[in-house]
Amino acid sequence: ERRFKTGANAVQHVESGYCTGCRGQDNARRQIYNYAQQQRPMNRFMNETPMLEYGGGDFQQDVPDFPYCCPECSRSFRQLSQLLQHQDQKHNNPRMLSY
Image (cartoon, rainbow, N blue to C red):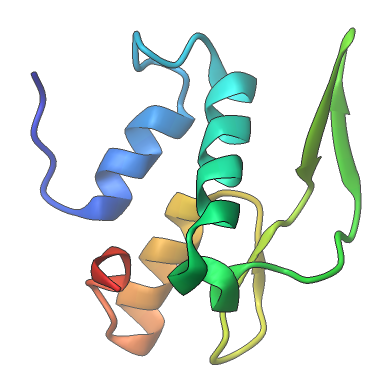
């Protein structure tokens, strides 16, 4: 069991692919994206139109290249953890995952 100081740190751990339950970085990224898409409060942090589709090797991903966006400044992010850190540092919103 691991504990993290912030939600961004926990998400970053999963996104890294080092989490034993996630079976790799690409799978972790897809799982986080699919989960975020299903959460109604996350809708304002999701890009409506994918900029680029991400695909790697033989395993085609359904995750857009920059699926997350900041609703306050419209900056796009590849990883949810990057958006969480941005919200904390630039907009003083450290509890974005609390909804």
